[in-house]
View 1: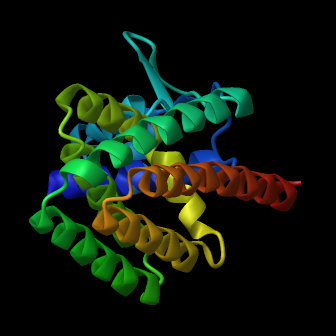
View 2: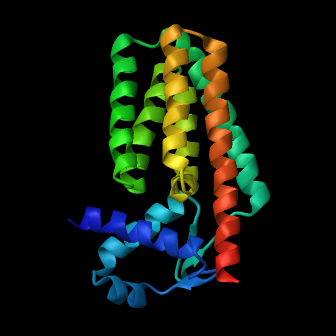
Length: 218
């Protein structure tokens, strides 16, 4: 229960950081937040640790937790690297992927479709992560897989937020279908290009979302 609570708190804090409730450099008061969410300090601290792992919070011993929002250039650079890492994963997976793994991708897409129909961005992203992690694994290169997972974790809040844009989930599904089609055909170049474009679009959509939030806040 506390673990689930920590996830929910982390998601709420993430949204509050993106909508401007907490600005870059703000200190997050554990006592006040625990009261606000109606929880003990344990799940709150776990939530803050989750945000630290994605880079949205910096934990400083004896000082507390502080909001850290990466700038546009840093985000652009991370999305560029993520796009290229995933493209390499797809290129290798197109040659090495098993039929069972392709079935995993199709199942993840079916669940993404259900989440999209329900307008549930959190559920969509959970299945979306499985989709991408399967491709990392099927690259057959454990080092590449681990590096991709690390950056995926770092970009998690930003990749999830862009799904809130109108029409983004159906568009993402269409992109997934193109990726699966290329992998099924064993077309390395098409798979790499499709996945690279998919991640680049996520970065562009996130920038659009943040621009919209700034306009709404002004």
